[in-house]
Amino acid sequence: MGKWRIGTSNKGRNLVTYLYPHSIISEQFRTIRTNIQFINREKKHMVLLITSPDRYEGKTTMIGNIAVSIANQKEKVLLIDANLRNPALHQMFMSAQEPGLTDVLKGDAIQEEVIVSTQIPGLKLLPSGKIPSNPSELLGSDVMKNLIAKVSPLYDVILIDSPCLLDVTDTKVLANVSDGVILVVKQGQTKAEHVYNAKKTLQYAKSNIIGTILNGSH
Image 1 (cartoon, helix red, strand yellow):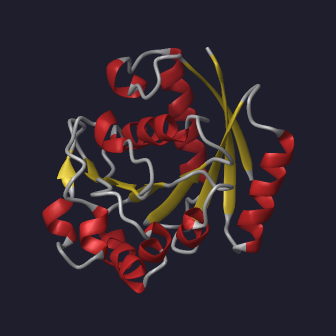
Image 2: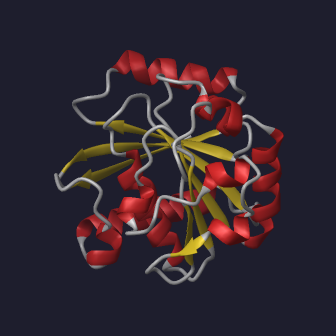
C-alpha cells in the first residue's frame, strides 16, 4: 500500500491542477497519478474508490485533481459522484447535479443521457442526481454493479467519490465494485483510531487498499 502526502490551500474544492498546472501542488498530484498507474500497471481499465474516514478531510478535492492530472495524460477518465448524501463534484466542475446517478439507478435514465463532458479534455462526469432516501440500497444494487461493468471498458480510469467511510454503509458496498481504494486522511485532524477503524472496515469488506493520501497544509 502506498502513502502519499500533498499540501492544499484553504480555498476548499479548487481544481489546482487545472488552474495552476505548473504549481508545486499540481506536481504532487502528478506524482500521485504516477504512483496509481504504477501500482495498477497490469490492469487496462481501473475502477478506483476514493474515500476518507470522516467528513471534511478533502477527498473531493483530491479526487477532482487526480482526475484532471490523469486526463492531462490523454487518458479517458470518468468521475462518478456516488456521494448521494452530500454531492459536490457537480459544483467543482460547474455542472448540473441532475439528472445523474440516482436517475440511472432508479431506471429513469441511461448513463449515456446523464454523463457530461467537463472543461477538461478526456474527463467526463456522472453527477449524483437528486439525493435519494435510500442511497445504500441504490449503491448496493445489481443495477450499480451492471453500470460499472458497462462503463468500465469505455474509460482508462473510473474514479468514484463516496461518503466518508465511518458514517454510513454506502462506501462499503461501493468498495466491492472497485479495483482499489484510496484513503484520504487530514493532517492534524483525522484521529489515528479512525484511520485504524477505516482500514479494518475496508479489510472486512475485502477491499484492495492501494494507498493513503495525507492531506496537509500548504
